[in-house]
Length: 292
Ligand code: NAD
Figure 1 (cartoon, rainbow, N blue to C red):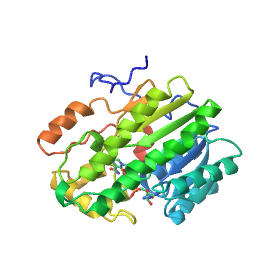
Figure 2 (tube, protein in one colour):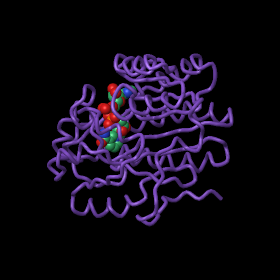
Figure 3 (cartoon, protein in one colour):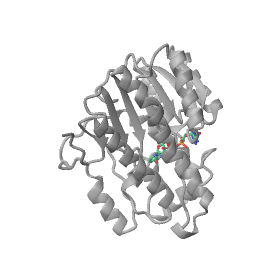
Figure 4 (cartoon, rainbow, N blue to C red):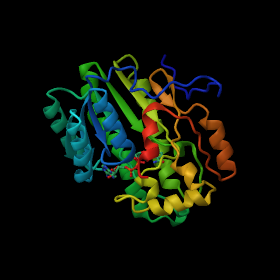
């Protein structure tokens, strides 16, 4: 039976760099959502650097185009496609267009697009905010998995990277809709990982803590992000720490999680103090310069 538990490993254990599953990346056909900024942009650039062909997708197609241009100017292969991940229809169209452009089934989908939200207590959060956050952060990832996984499973190979957050394990007040959306992504990824065992399709879930991107510093789409950044600072995060690259992962059966997070998140939640976990990790080193 497939074991589907959150790995708990000693904090001292050496953690691997972020990989893209065990799959080769030099010939990957990757679709990255939210590729116009921050983590998605870094994913797209890194995958292209490793020789992959990349569909850079974003609700803001101009930013996706800018990422694709950076890749093609450097000699890589990329195209920009507009897609609002909260729409199943648009994600379905994205998959079809990507398949056409690649001339084959995508081998990797990075369900990364997301928005920051917060600032109000559960009972005071406007319903539209719940729908906005869950629609993008949770349904957006569900749409991506629902659409891309069957084609990869049929092809007998592929990789799914879902970007959750340390918030998946957090009880930080006034961030319920964000916490809930990311906990949903975590549960979805674990379930998917169990379902896909032995299928040739790997599932990875990333749980970043604070990475200085537009989501924290007040981006174009994330209307609530300035407030969120202020809130994080109010929790005691120094701007320098918010700006620092913080993410670690542990590979266990194709599922990447932050192994020490559970205990620390409980600790943090008890004190209403989000913590950062700094561990310089390959791809993410570049984030220190993003949004600066
Ligand atoms: P960002 O704001 O820099 O980038 C998010 C991108 O998603 C933007 O290009 C935006 O246009 C796009 N986007 C927003 N709504 C969309 C939609 N409906 N459809 C398609 N694209 C949409 O933020 P980021 O920090 O790079 O965030 C990427 C992911 O990482 C998000 O899921 C976020 O929740 C997660 N995350 C970020 C942090 C952090 O500290 N930055 C921490 C934990 C998790």
